[in-house]
Image (cartoon, rainbow, N blue to C red; front, side, top):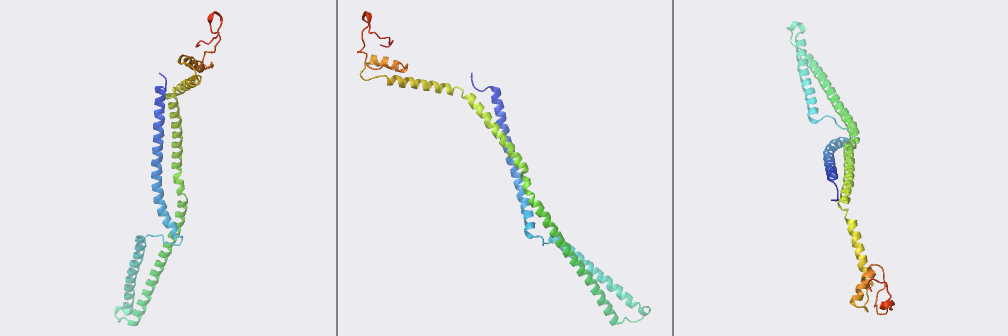
Length: 248
């Protein structure tokens, strides 16, 4: 029995299965990388779009730093006020009435010092916030420029899948060729039969009898020609017609 062997069929099945697996894996890798790319691109894109002059702290962090500065300033004010009161009351051994003007002046000076320190710390926090924002911007811009590299594994997977598909196509062609070995023979036979029929029919004539046309058909099919009526043949020796035509 002709056709592809069992071994060739098994090899082809393995190649087809491998190509399908490679294509499936390539699609999965592309889907995973695309999702991650879109997520990172969206996050980094927002930072880059805000420019270098942006705040770097989140709202929660900024509020926490501000609250810490304010709370510490309030503590410092209370401590300074208590220390000032103790110092003034100690004048005269603690028996002298506190001079109101001196107390007011010292308290005011202390409050101003505390407020100045608080303002300075808030200003420093703001500067640190924007410095972090500038740093975030340049880092995001650099990472955003590298995002296309994420598709390198996808390109490699696609190349492997393409190679697998090419091998699968070539293998299938071999199988198809081995399975259809009979087609050239059949087509050749059909073509030969059609040629015999055409030549035979073309050698028949309307002025010949049925028997004569039978001979004409076979002469035409065999390429001997000579169609038409045989009434005009000459007689040869011993009453023969002098022809060597086996169909005469």
